Length: 276
Image (cartoon, rainbow, N blue to C red):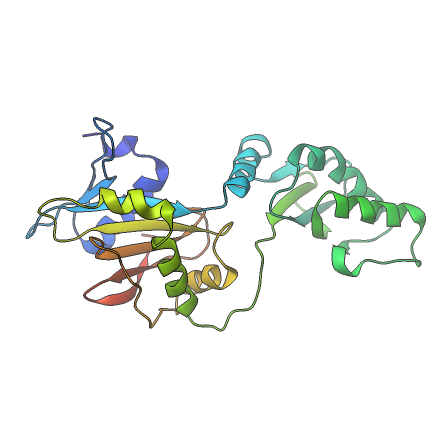
């Protein structure tokens, strides 16, 4: 069996959360010795070990973009010597990073020099600005910039920070869309292999841990997951042999709140803490 220290970060995060919440040891199981092994196992003291499979609902293109940012731009934050301010720039989900990197600073500098510190692509200025301002605004739109806001850089060099538009929308304040998303996700072909791995002879429980990534799930689902007061009322339909589902807002380990949701087929929905 592989040691816990060798687990992928996402699996270690799940392992620690489940162990703390359940008050039971959770160990690595998939040691790559054979195919189709489930990821973790819960070592109950009074019943057979329970399999745990870890999966995610993500948009692969956005995750690739986030990975590039982490690798090349210090998690989306880069120094911008030509500028005087710290700029928070919201871009569409899949910008062309190399092109953005080459041209973003110069166009923001045009706005700064004109004393403009707020840009909104949908309500941009027209005739009352000079041609160079209009050109910079048009360039920002072509780069995939949807908004940009600045404030004085009080610590260190001026920087640019990127955030991604995640299709914000309406939310009714409940968690019912979470149940709808769970049902759709579990019935999709991408879950077939995960569910198959949870079929373990003798096990009385089977757990699926899902990272609901901000790049993929509907806004109402993401928003409901972040609100520690939200617990769905409607029960999801768990396919056999699943008995539990654990839902984590993702990217994992990021400061998107300090709790997540779980559903137990016997006890229903509940919130659990993700931080110690």
